[in-house]
Image (cartoon, rainbow, N blue to C red):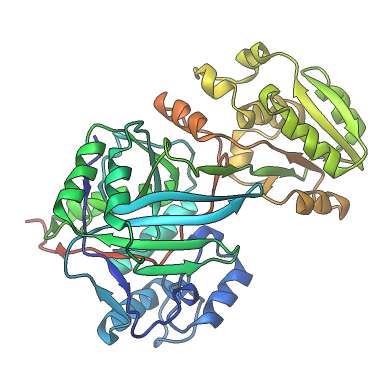
Amino acid sequence: MAQIIPFRGIRYNPDKITDMSNVVTPPYDRIYATVQDLCYDRDPHNIVRIIKGKQPSGMNGGDVYTRAAKYLAAWLQEGVLVRDETPAIYVYHQEYTFAGERLVRKGFVALGRLEPDKVHAHEKTLKGPKEDRLRLMRATEANFGQIFMLYSDSLRKAEEALAVAIEGVSPKIEAVDADGNIHRVWPITDPAVIQTVQASLAAKDLYIADGHHRYETAVNFMAECEEKGWRETAPESFGYRMMTLFNIAEPGMSVRPIHRLVHGIEQYDAAEFLAKAGEDFAVERYSSLQKMTAAVSAGAAHHTFGCYTGGIYATLRLRDEATMDNRVSGDLSSDYKRLDVSILHAAILERLLGVDAQALAEQRNVTYTIDSEHGATMVDEGREQIFFLMNATTADEVIRVADHGEKMPQKSTDFYPKLLTGLVLSKMEIEKSAVQ
């Protein structure tokens, strides 16, 4: 099932880059304009210039993709980036604080065979981001960001072997992100350890937790290469994709909720909306955002949403799960129909507000935030009409829905912390003989 192999990773040269925190970034889709500016200012070799460069200026013009390729080639030639001599898998630990608790999420980076029929996705994707990432991949023929993969193995043989391999060993890479989370990486070249990891995952299914656009982009690029008659000349090529794998049986797996903001609803009236919501939901009002938030958390087992609109703080608790058998259209599993995001989208956004799947895909009426205070402020300022406060989707729910071959609505999960881009890169080796 899961074909995992070591690879000769490309890493920043510690002789030239003394602080890794200055050259790594969040994933490309979390690099907003202000973050992009900060990354540019930190170091002239920050990976942002490759994965999400500014347009135009510098490097003799060109677009962001051709200039990304020029940066990559120049940094390799200058020795800013160096390629490991021995294939390795890379242990990756993230130490972070979540809900007041200090945790460590433990995984490893490897190349995974691209097998779209065997890898389970759980979220729908959009055309724009895939085209953007494909253009970058065509120009650079490299992997920069990670695919965040989950698997389930209660025996934990891979984790035990990797723990022994790094015991007492200092990490080769250490970086701190903007939230103060610590990211550490250890290359593992011992063939016996690598074989143990490969064997323990050989019969496992893989689930995309984060990076759906990147995975589909890699599959699309592989199809292009095969159509052109190009050949893989090394394991680091278009048939494999760099990914970070985490066992959900390990502690330290945290998921944040992604809240919804609604705008552009014609003739919207807050009191009328809450009255209609009362058909499927028990509606209770609160005096503050803090009290509403506490009630949403306490009601997590009963499909409870927070709703701030028209100066009213309220919770909406689903009266009867069986209602969703009719509210959610299509031949979908009960696991899907009982997801909080499915309930919100079907019973509230579409049924009561007229925001259907097409409107969501076109990003017409709904925006997203992980910050509840920001969500409430946007309503107070009149830029949004409703703020829906969500509980988090769990990793177990992700796997159950993916096992049915179903995909959740976009922005259903936010695994925390994000994987940093720039810790390890992978350059493809391709022979470009044309089809005869």
